[in-house]
Length: 104
Image 1 (spheres, rainbow, N blue to C red):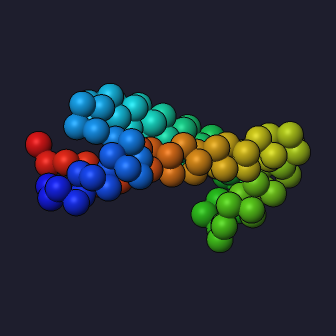
Image 2: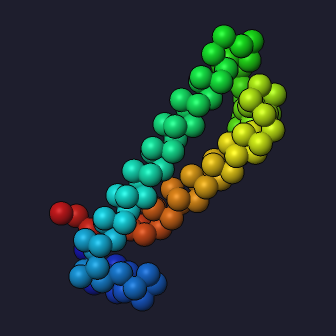
Image 3: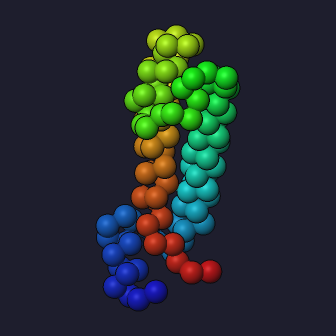
């Protein structure tokens, strides 16, 4: 890692070599929670649309939320959309914590 890169970390993100292990653990836990949420959402939608004519016919998340609202309820359709937004924010935050992790 060059001195300029290290200086950029310290100035821009206040990430110093001493804080890298902490940042890595935060990044790992955020990544794990994002992956867990994605697996749960995939399982929930697969169970919801199993045996239905819409199974495998969706083009975007909005149509999935509409289908969930149709079969399960409007509240769960909205919760599905909010869970997608939340997962994307957590995933983006995990990437921001360590933009270019130093090599081990």
